[in-house]
Amino acid sequence: MTFVSGWAGFREIFHKLPLQGRFFMPFVDFFPSQTPDVISAEKELLIGWSLGAHLVLKHACSVNAKKVLLFAPFLYFCDHVNKKLLDRMILAFEKDKSKVVSDFLHNIGARAYNKNIPDSLKSGLEFLKVSKIENFAKKDNYYCVCAKKDFLNLASACNKICKKPIIVNSNHYFSEDTINDIIKKLHKALV
Image (cartoon, rainbow, N blue to C red; front, side, top):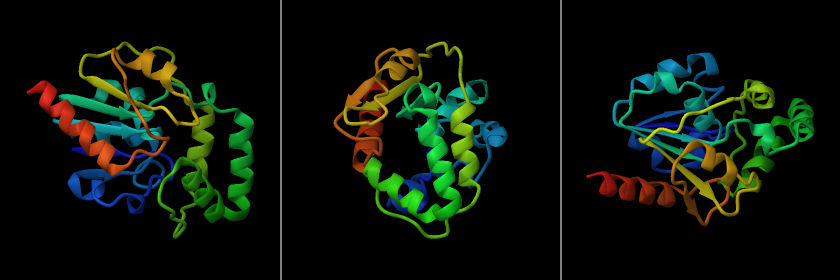
């Protein structure tokens, strides 16, 4: 299993996922141009969350996994968030990056983390403003999971990406129990 996390999706906000397979965080472990190298090695289950899901979609031609599971995917972030919010986050990041990350993780319902925040995360915010996928042809082996309480309200994006999106009672951050339950259900349904 390969898990491509989201913006500020540090290993430390998860307990088990980083130990279950390969774990990558955009703008820390790799940059968007390196996404094909990160995702192409996975042959079984490729998981992307938020920005990680977007990068998987953007580089779908490099996917070799039998199953692709996308949590909170989007084609263009600014279809769901005003660019001005990202601009404010970028300005705030320049002044106090730990506070920006801490506030963000709190707002999405994730575990707090504000140690060793790399400057490269600012590039991730800038990337979210411009990275856009114009068209995505739905694929039978792609499964989307959207959350009822997600501030991004990604149901419309999920419907454009997957044939039958899975809707769960969560916010933008998905608990590891939720992620692992969906992995188990997906495996049972395909066996």
